[in-house]
Length: 422
Ligand code: ASP
Ligand code: MG
Image (tube, rainbow, N blue to C red; front, top):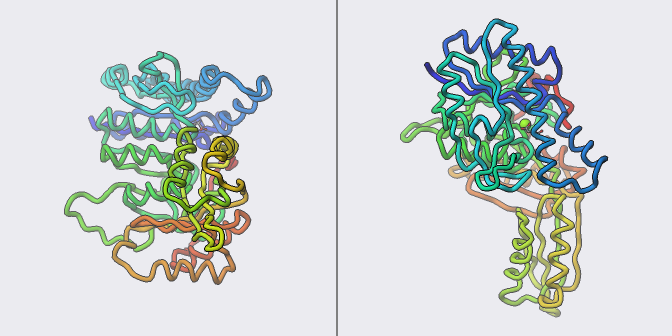
């Protein structure tokens, strides 16, 4: 029998009625003749609430215990979904990530999946059960401790299981009808994409699109698993994310969409001596602190002083660590001072058609200029242009660029069915 992996997000499982709705969907797929393995997130805002609770109990909870706490959220969902399924006359078995064979690295809170040994899942499926797996968690190969994969990690669990089970497709169910040309929450005229390449989805996810977890898209791309993004709340067809097969020509639109990310901050190292090795010293210090940076800009140095400024962006939450690491190398590098700005936002325009179409940058920067949005940093890849602007102008900038590329839809299809957007 073909195997289908389905993943349901927290807003699709917010209360008892939602859980019953999800159970009906799952049993319909089973009835239609597939073996079904389901991955669930924690109900509604449970993960955030558990984190808040931990903060109240202890300002700096031990990472091991935090993972024990967080994995409880998904365990609640998996058991309730299994119960709702049995109530519909089907047999279901729930499994924790560890029972499901999700083997990870040891870092609590951001473990990586290194292997999946789905023996218990395949035998449960062979015995005719519907399988429900708790998302976002696994067990460390080295320490044997329970780990979590980082926020939004259930998507990655789903794709990893789909790869291990050789499933036909990995369906990701959420509270919107698919992948949109922009976040419908800020661009109400966004239109739904029927299909886009995994390469484009990767750039959108890296640019801040929340619809799919970045690592899940990387995983799906590596193992060539088609992802089908759909809404739990409707029967609409959704979006297929898959790279075109060798030799297949898809006449894709030039632009896939616009992503935005208000979550970054900008660090500027002011007055850096313009000599070889200075940038290396700065970024080595940041890397030693274990931080991932995104965009980098170095100014032209002033002729009189021979000094330059180097700016880079990184997630807001990493700001303190970065400043501390840089302060430590100030005596050796001899820079003047550090500036920190967390009021920035990033906007990315993504489309595989950029490779072969001219004028995309011109239209893009004209749209931002017409909207009076100032650009502070720019970075590009073959299929993406990203800029940093003021955070308060970000939503407006997204709408301006979206319109300029003719992506606006008049059909009002961008409905957000649930979720608190927390
Ligand atoms: N419940 C976890 C979170 O909120 C994992 C997930 O939903 O994917 O981040
Ligand atoms: Mg999610």
